[in-house]
Amino acid sequence: MFNLQKLAQEIERVRVHLHELVEQKSGNLIDPEVAEVSIQLDKLIVEYERVKMRNVRR
View (cartoon, rainbow, N blue to C red):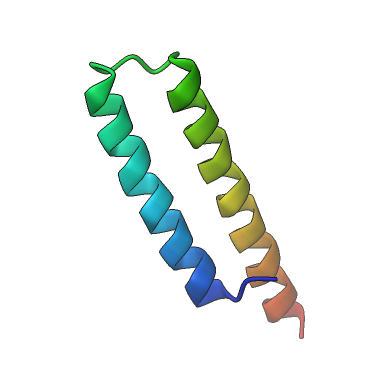
């Protein structure tokens, strides 16, 4: 499992990749590749929040 710092770094890496990909696809947000990376980013954010909540409860 990732710790918060590593998750934050991975979120930022994927976010930058998504931004660059959207630019490459001329802003086409429904491109399958863009959607796939967006879903990956969403999952990382959800995992970050889960880990953060677990740490708060301790």
